[in-house]
Image (cartoon, rainbow, N blue to C red; front, top):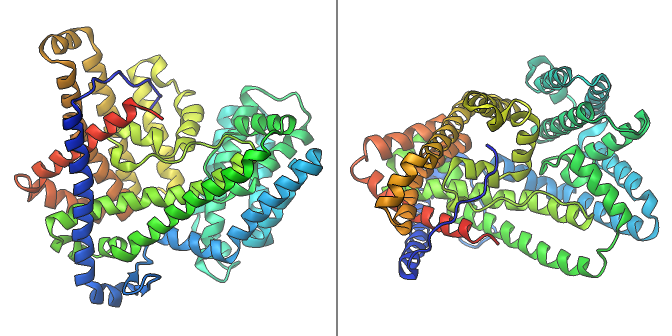
Length: 501
C-alpha cells in the first residue's frame, strides 16, 4: 500500500492518444444515454416501487435512493450549511482581531454546533469515548490504546446500545448522524493515542486535552472528514497561528472554490434526475433485463456519482480548512482514470490512505520486513476498513477483493521489476509497446476494481449479477468489448499520471 514514484512512461503518437480519448468519452456518453433511455422507459414502475420525487428539472423525476446523498443534502438545508458558514465567519473574525482566541473559539463553536445536531446525550457519548481514549493513552502502550479504541468502536454494533441511542432521536437520520460522528471521531482518538504513545508531548495533561478537544470538534471535519492526523492538525494549527498571511487571496479563493462545489453539486443532481441508477440497482429484475450498453452505463454511473458526491462532501470542509490555513487531503481523483487497486486507494480518499499507512501498515512492518509482513499488514489494513464501515458481509467481500487485487498487482510489479524479466521485456518490446501491455493488464485490473466497487456501492447481489452477465453469459460478447474500452480508460489514466498537475 505504500506510495512509490510512477515509472516514466513512453509517449504515444498523438493520433493514438486522441482515439483513446474519443472512445473513452464517447463510451461514457453513449452508455449513460442508454441508461437514461432505460430509466425513462421504466419510470412508472420505478416511481411506484421506489417513490421517485418530483424533480428540480421540468419533465424529470429525482431518484432519492442514495441514502448518503439524501441525508447530507437534507442536513445541509436544515442546519449544516449554516453552521459551516458560522465557522468560517468566526475563524476570520477571531483570526483578524483576536488571534490568540481563535483556536479556543473554534473549539467551543464546534462543540456547540455538535450539541445542536447530536443533542446533549449524543455529545456525551463522544465525550466519554474521548475521556477513556485520553486516559488510556497516558499509559503510553500502543497495543493497549488500540485495544481500547477498537472496543469503543465496537459499541457502534452493540444491538442493545443501538436501541437506546435510537430512542434519543425522532428520526433515523438523526441517529445516523451520531453513528457517523462516533466512527470518524474514533479515527481521531486512535491518531491522538498512537502519536502520544510514540512521542509523548512536553506539554501538561490539560494542554494535551485541549488539543484533543480542538482536533475532535473541529467543525468542518467533524461529521464526515476528510481525515487528517493529529500530528498534522496540531502542527498546521500552530503554524497558522504564527503566520496569518492569507488575506487578499481569501475572497477570490472562496468564490472560485464555491463555484466549483456548486458545479459538482449540480452535476450530482443532474445525474440522479436523468439516470435512476440507485433505484435500478436495488431491483435484481431491472439489472437482469438491462441492455448491455445500459448495464455498462449503470456501472459507470454508480462509481461516477460516488466520485462526484465526495467532491462535494469533501470539497466544502476542505475549502474551509484551507481558509483556516490547514492542508487538507487532496480531493478524490476521477474514478474513470483509475486503473489499479493501489491507485484507487491512494488517490480516492487520500486522508484515509495516509491514516492507514501511518497507524497500521508501517507499524506492522509494511514492505520493509519482507513479503509476509507486507501481506499481513495490508490484510489487517483492509480488515480495519471493513470493520470501521460496519463489517457487513458485502463489506467483507469488498475488502477481500481489494486485498487480493493489491497483492496481485504488487506481485506482478515485483515480477516485472526483476532483472531477468525486465531484460527480456526491454529486448523484445519497445517503450510504446510496453505501455500498451501495461494498459492491457490494467484493463483486467480495472474490471475487477469496478466489480469490487459495485459490491461496495450496491451489495453482493449487484456484483453477482454483473459477474454473471459480463463474464459468464457474456464472456464472448460483452466481456471483450468491455475490456477494450477499459483498455482505453487505462491509457487515459496512464497519460494523466505521467503528466501530474
